[in-house]
Image (cartoon, rainbow, N blue to C red; front, side):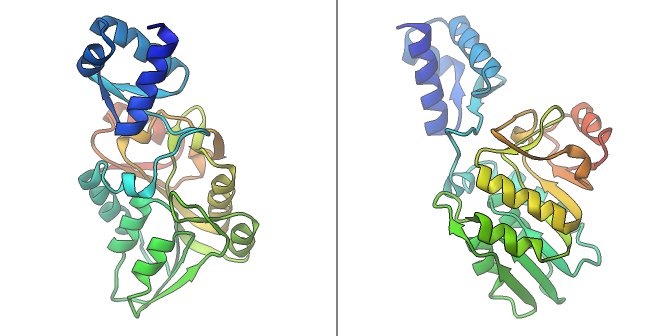
Length: 253
């Protein structure tokens, strides 16, 4: 088996399972662990995977993006802690944008139900969830529905957003890095996220530690536009400090 063939199989396995293990790959590919580690370093250099201790996980890109259902099974306790902490940042906001994606959806679940709130969202699941609360007014942005995430996109969505001034936006991303800012694989999604940030007075990024250092295809914002980053303690404090130097407060929970 050539190195190219091993690389292809490693990437396919990571995308299929969500992560790969060095020992398991060595057995499956019939090579030494050090060969697998070299393969992982090469794939990380090409932006296809991110290495972890003993393995790796795939980086979302123009050719690969996880579905909402997959995200609902990955790092769920971490995402719930992040969502609860992010919801506490609501303050006196009366209008809120909630991004598509599983972690923003959990933020929506954690928002207070005992006060009037208007929520603008591009997420069908989030709209359905919040519509059950009589004190919350839900504005679902129209547009083409993406099958993997059930989020709306394209010019219909961004045109509606351009007509709003929102107090607070909860934004997710497929990657966040100090070099490339906030990124996502799909240009249509990138446009919606960028417009939501432009329409909002305050922007809070919510994301698990695996998002950090990763860069996807479309850049939609710089780190400096964020008021706050909410992530978990699995992001090292030294790295959190480096992000805080770019402007936002960084909260690790």
